[in-house]
Image (tube, rainbow, N blue to C red; front, side):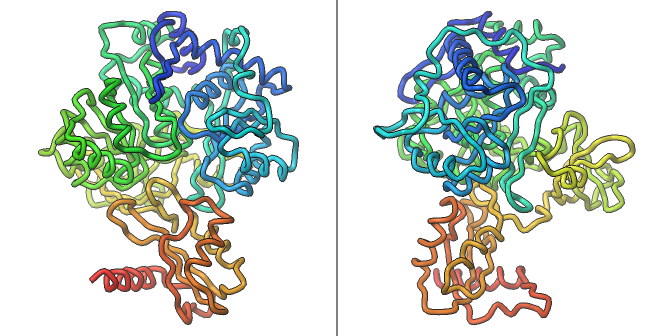
Length: 533
């Protein structure tokens, strides 16, 4: 089935107007009627500011109701919503405003300085809409409260070519905007929306509304503890609204694990979205400290992050919880899932989704050949490609045997019955707490310090975050690690900041300038382990 999210959400709002769509941790409730009403008012405000279908609106927000209201308004009007990482510094935001040609930036007043500096440096005019989240008196732009005041109705039907973009984490360089036709995304999410929640698949919009409004289906109450700016938290929330469920919103840029546990239990969360161990470890520790379980939670979903068997075990012990550990990418959605319904199922093995295949170096399918090595690929409903990068689009979305695929570059070993063993990503990207960090970007930031002659940045294994950003520096003059960390912190987002800096007299580069990263990583781990003995 193909459908517009905005059309379906409007229809659900007409069918169950008084049902709660969004619930914040501080008690504010948005019924489906209010959700649609504020989205309609915002769409009218954007139109009044000259924003037309096909233009982009950048969203620099952490998890807040305004994020999803903006998405609703944009999709209904054919405007392209573009989430940005709220941890970015002004220069990083400017780069994406320029890349996406954003007409409007919606931001929280707590980030007024970042937003103001970013827009001032942009290569085109960008309007601002400010969401009040603190006591900042001088926040430039139209106040959100004014933007959603009004009674304008949403367009009755979204344009057929409506898109939304999600920036990658910079796996192979600077972040790239992945362009999704939203009807393709709806189709790609059918398994997650209906099958994983034990609901029948609809074939028409009317059937989908009937499923969403049918009281015989248990209410889905989704608590995303990963940020909306990343795919899984956003798409699961969109899917929750598709089936008439409720999205619980913590309204904070940082995880307060104890507050999240209380929120889940008070509001009867049925599903929690995490980012592997980085969220799960503090979550289970909070529940254990409070002496409570998670009695209403039936599923936990994670993507893009190390999720250890021990963390899963502790989570299973908090209730009758099924864990879905997704192997996914921004470009292709889910490729495989490791599902465990209890401690006895651990550690579990990832199993390919029906539309996923494994390709060898000759681009032949080998997912039915146990022991074969290859890269993951996906067929079916796929993104349109990367914004402004036809060469990268052609490389990542090749046509093989007359069928379009997406091949992000994840290597696997084939096991029996469509199970796989994940071997790693083909690039040097660092995955720390679900955030992808491009080493060259951090190296370049370090090298702007006059006391740095050479620098290499790599990921070092960590039991909680998967990897930690570590820098090896060859100094040109006396400098301390603290000075370098302060320097980098003024250039890049905090999660890109090295957690450790080690000094070397030489990088031992080859004549062609290369460094043996594997050997260097082993040396760094050895030095770290010696320090902790």
